[in-house]
Each structure stands twice: as structure tokens, then as C-alpha cells.
Image (cartoon, rainbow, N blue to C red; front, side):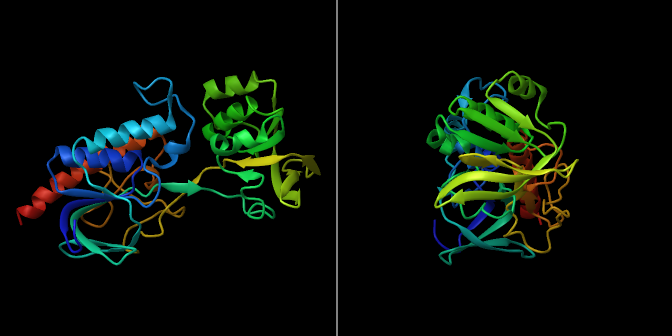
Length: 312
């Protein structure tokens, strides 16, 4: 691979959506390359258990990511671990510039940059990151063995991580701003039967407090009654969703008011030859199986687009 090479398809992002897109692009015999600056597998690579990917019972997120990577590589997809710094829209070809300055051209471009954890944006959150504040229970839960922790959120991830932490810690407080959880019913049933987890409803955290480099408490406020208080804790795990990694998306590509890329049923954007998949794309559900499906659809659609481009 050399600078100024032209590919039929370039994929940006190596999560389930990007890897699946790469697999299907290579099955369609298209000259394809995938760029990923970080961990191959994306968010699932740091997830402990994956229970809802069809046909994969009792598998960890890391193992699933490894299987996806191995499967994709078996079709000969080149994967380059380099950061992309710029996407340039062109009339015939689109271009991708890497951090090192190398420029690559393509007919079809599949954007699979995923999302990043959403932050609370409160005092103490950044200050105690890594010393009591975490966005990954499987990464940091070990350090809180037999201690008390707070989990913030009400979706599948928050409940899954709270259940995981309950196996390690003395006590888990799940703090949720509403009075009902968004998590699936099976996860809610498990949560309610776990004696080490206590749910605090209708509550937000306003500050994370500490002493030196250690978290000691969170300040909270009840959204219904206005009551304020402080809850002692050794750690705070935050799972309030993801924001799309849309920093590289060209201005010409349409996004909604939350920053997710708008596509049609073929995962095509409003710019010819550019497709968006996975957690970057506006859709009803963000699940691994949906991301993989996006990758398949975008690859098939891009193959069709490439053939039309050749026929011009």
C-alpha cells in the first residue's frame, strides 16, 4: 500500500460494522482497505459478556471481536492501524488523508467510526478519571473489590455493568434520573433479584467529590422532590450512552440534531458514494447485530455503486 493508491472502497473504523463491511467487500472482490486508529473491535472489545449476538452463546466481547477480526482477515482484508485526519469529497473519487499525510482515493467510502461514551459533564468527573471515575466496569471493577460503588444510567449497559460489579463489590448503588429503566426485561429481572444492588430513582448526580486522588462521595439531587444529599462511595461508573464519533464527517453529509449521520435503507448518505454504518448512523437500536447488518448492507450497496461508477 502506497500513498495516492486508489481503492474501490475505503472503510474507516474497525468495530463490528466496519469489520463486517470489510468481509462483504472482499467477498465482492473489491479492492478494499480498512483504517482504524484504536482497538480493533471497538466498544465490544472491552465488554465482558455478549449474550444477544445470535449463535454466539457465552462469549466475551473480546472473543467476539477476535472472531470478527479473524473472519474478516481470512478474506484478505488489509487493516491499517492509522488515524484518519481528513475526508475530502470529490466529484469522481473521495479521498482520505491519514495523520502522517498519506492520501488515498476511493470510489465508495464507508464511515464506521462508531461512538464514544457520553460524559455527565459535572465537577469532579474529569479530575478523578482513572482514580475513581470509570466508563468500563470490566476494565476497572477489580480495583473496587469489597468496596462501595455508584453506577449511573438506566439502559442495558448500565444494568449489565452494575450486575458485573455486584459480583466484586460490597454494595452497588444504581442511580437513574427516571422512575423506569430502559434496559431489557431480562436484565431488569436479574437486577431486581440482586441483593447487593440498590436503585435510587429520579435522581441525578451534581458533583463527584474526593480527597487527594480518591473518590469519597457523590452529591445528588432528586429530580421530583428537589431533595439534595451526599452519598459516600469509593467509585463512580458512568453509563449514560454514546455520542457519535462524527468529528471527521464532511459538512456536506447530513446529520440530525444529535450528530448522527442520516442515511437511507442502503446506509447511503446524501453524498453519492458515502455510506454510514453502526453507532454513527441514525437508527432505532444500537446493537452489535444491527451494526453488523449495517456493515453488510453498506458493503453490498457500495459494490453496486462501484459497478455503476465503472459503467460511466
